[in-house]
Image (cartoon, rainbow, N blue to C red; front, top):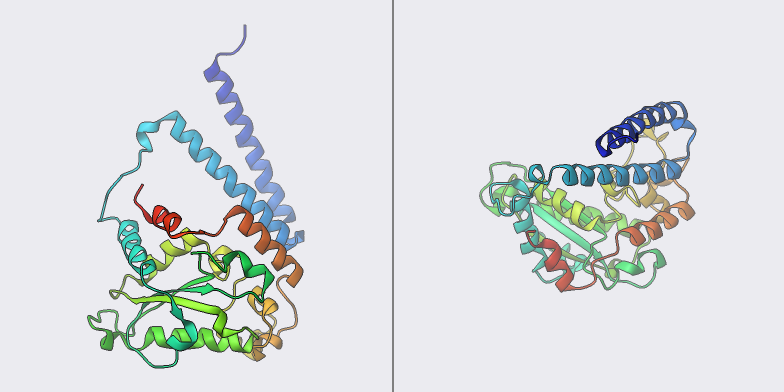
Length: 277
């Protein structure tokens, strides 16, 4: 007599559990032997498996996993509102914006619009930024931009300085930015990083490192960031002995990233991505 469907499924779950323990043991044993690129590939596969199991739970009991359609009390909904407002602003030149001091803290998105860097071309005519960031106020309770200080302006000047040292044509970059209610910067930045997956953000683990401020002489044993490998020129980064990844590997990772997460091509797609499900 064959097993019932329920018994068969329980057996499969048991097999998966055992394989999971074997996988954990194998990773603990061999992790340090693996190049970073191989680790990243395995991490991507594991993330896909996690998504598969989440979907399986939804199938098992859809009533538990229904989405809350509207909840302005939820931080994600508020962050989405701020993000929606930001992307409706016109883009302006990053270089021109950083020329004159202005006050306020908040969020910003940097866009690549050039033609000189082949790896970045998928972004050139898209609505996907290459980097998303925030600038926090000196006074966390500030109610006016003057009280927030020139935090955004300072942050943009830091990026512009890094780009120039890295040999980038700064006229190839545009920006959207907005002063934001003090205390909301992190929530909006986090939402936008998860939405756009910008390749220069460290959370995306592709070409991160522009936000680094420099290593002390005692910490130069740290490996050079992918951003500094792609755009050498910052003196403290050039003094670092070893790359985290080769330029060839970084470029390959960028290609893979854009295949998996194609840039948002139109305003219509962007508005759809920002809409509440």
